[in-house]
Length: 80
Image (tube, rainbow, N blue to C red; front, side, top):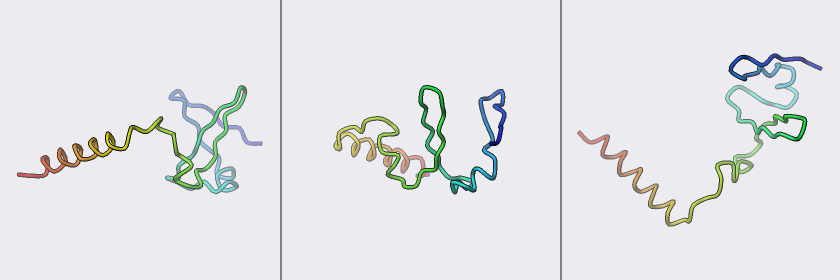
C-alpha cells in the first residue's frame, strides 16, 4: 500500500509504481469514479469509453450548425 497526500488545491500524485502497474503514462487520460466510500482512478483504454462524459449530445443538425459557425468565426480571425 502506498500513501499519498492531498495538496491544498486538491491534487494528488499517483505513485510511479501504481501508474506502471495499470499502464498510466504522462499525458494519458484517466477516468475518475466515486462510490459511497472510494475514489477509483483508471486509465481510459479507448476514446469511446468517454461517451457521455460531457453530457447528452445535441441533435445532429444543431451540432453541425454550431460546428459551421465555429469554423466561420475561426476563418474570420485568420483573415487580414
